[in-house]
Image (cartoon, rainbow, N blue to C red; front, side, top):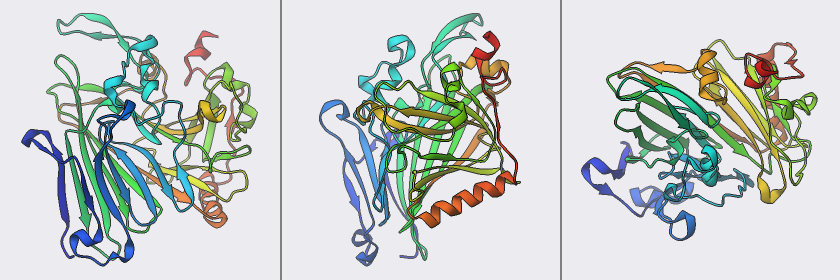
Amino acid sequence: MTEALSWVLTDTANRVYVEQCAITPATIGLPAGDAWSVTKSRLRGGLSDGVDVVDINNGHLSFTVLLSRGMGLWKGVCGDCTIGWDSPARGPVNPMFINLLEQGGLGWLKGFDECIVRCGLNSNGAAGIDRVRDNNGNLSEVMLNLHGYIANLPAKYVELKIIPGKRPKIVLVGVVEEARCFCPQYRLTTTYTTEIGSSRVDIRDEVENFADSPTEFQMLYHCNFGPPFLDGGARLVSPSLEVAPRDPRAAEDIKTWNIYKAPEPGYVEQGNYHDFAAAADGSTLSMIRNRRGTRGVTMRWNKKQLPCFCQWKHTAGPSEGYVTGMEPATNYPNLKTFERERGRVLTLDAGQRYVIDLAMEIQETPEQVAAIEAEVAALMKQKKTIVHPQPIAKWSPCAQDA
């Protein structure tokens, strides 16, 4: 194979829809030695009924992309490491079964079980009331649901590509639109890329404002992991220049902000806000590593694109969702009104695109974990992390109310 091959799986504009297909080396006339595959299918039964998925297996790392849920990355496997978490919301859940405004705007949680889920695009934080101009130009109150809409919208265009090379690449492209009359108009183009035999997947998102007027924009990547990376004594390894608890609950354990507990039934979640060090080009990273330092999962991104970071601790009982989240974002996940006041809500001009690069890597040996720890230490350049014992006003609404 010397030229790239491609297959359009969904194209609503041209009435193209492929319900099932499988691409393997044999499909395109290559030797079967690498044992990679890509399959597209539609799930049937229960709350997953009608969800379109693409399973990508590069021969070492495999993962599932949810075409019906904002191109989120559901679960995966790398070597003997499972990737993702066991949510009480057993999914993937078809968005048709979810009312995002249910329970005061918390309906989003009924479908929340992905490893990597996008939060946005008009809002990405807490549920609550915002004030915006309506179609008559008057200020009116609107209810913002938790974490926005994008994760519950299906792709309108999906294309699979195989790129030749010494290590061929599997590329999946999906386009999702979040738009309606008298409201913002966003087009998200997501590209997943993984090399045959690697333990890494790269994600590029391009968010376009295809309206004729400027619009606000927020994006947060909720990257969620349980065992084998999370256990009692696991650590967040991060170049944190500054860390503060989100609220009084998080302040209870701020002295051990980077250490995780064993499963604890009834545990009430904690969130910490961070400011990270980064390289000159903006690149930065964070890792969750298990207690023994034998397994790790690392997220990489560019701080110039995603300047904020939230650490989510939810070390509840296994059936309640034992999980932690690494959450790089354009802003902190507070109510949009607070983030707007702090100047952390972006504006996209008409036709403007915002590009975000993200990557997930799996560390399968102590040596690989140690290499990430050394990389984080190099970014810190012997600086010490400033740990605030209580929420601070620049990051948390509860601090200004205290």
